[in-house]
Length: 237
Length: 304
Image (cartoon, rainbow over all chains, first blue to last red):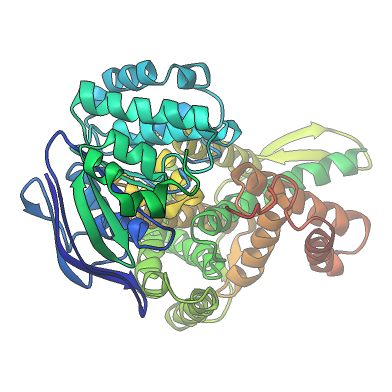
């Protein structure tokens, strides 16, 4: 569904990715874990065309999307739920969701809205409240809901657990699992919270300094002593 | 009292025009974080286009006054919109990622070029237009000071209120308006939702320029004299209005415009007409010193 081949990218003269290869197959949840600054966010943003890849290819559903402008990439069926959530703080929850549906067919809007509100009943209560007044967890729900409004083929999630209370983190991961299981959305998840991410994912990759160093099924990676030492036993819950 | 009332009417008329121009400043600032110093020049071009359009329709085309005015209005909005679009495309978009100072200087350059273009094409002498819309009402028939409200003033109010209402509806209710607000709040995220940000920016310039064009038309009709230099002062005053209302805030621009118009009218009436610009720009200084976010602006919260 989403395929990355030999991807190089960076910001200005700083190179962040050095030839990344990976694939996310239809219906899968794939997790990418790694330390701060490993290049995980850069990989997601490069898939979305900002920054542009300096070498390598990105394929979405068999189509080469490497050179396209960000809004064209998104319109081909990608949704990105970026680091820090980036909801529109001075727009209402409903308007935020409408923005998520900006590229979609207006005929689907009511149905998609209902589906998202069913998934996040909390958003329903807050529909006419400004995004900036929501709590961190609610903002994350809004960001995921907004991304789902476009009926994406692939959902990119960047650090959905960042800055959230453990209980809320568990809730968010349950919802991600449900989206994948019940709605068949393919998910590519980037996380520092390796434990939760790998437990959820069908397959996982580990990124170090802009390269993928380890790949395997989620369960295998969780059991891997090296991973345990680096990413799990230290802090993550 | 009568005198006060008359100045109130005059000030509101003037303020409505400033408000229309101020909207363009504040919209562009909201989205791109730049002051479009060529905006006043667009207003000047609008005044010229409306004059030419009106004269062409009446003298060459032989159209009746109402039709000629409507034609002038549409021609002005269309041409100023085109100018707004072109200026953004040619002078600002290539500098989108450049340091903030670069588009600012580019804007000043565009404004000088267009001013000289108007001076070359139309001459430097002031162009008069005999009053087109005459008459009005005498509201209070007092012996020492009759208070009047002219048809022209009514037209300015009605046009401004209609445009501002339409504009507010567009911003709050339509998908383009939503995309504009989203782009204003987080341009990168808007692109990540599939919004063609360049198109939104273009639309912003087109709308702002068309509003300034209408302001140009109304000034041509209201004062009956224009020259190639009117854009500078009106532009800076409308900018002051935008800052007073809180730059980036749309209701702020409308409110700021009205206040600047009122300040100018009352200062001219009660203190000295020679120093009316000093009063306006004195306000700009005071606002910048004591309330840099303006009346309705919000403090620039550091993003995390």
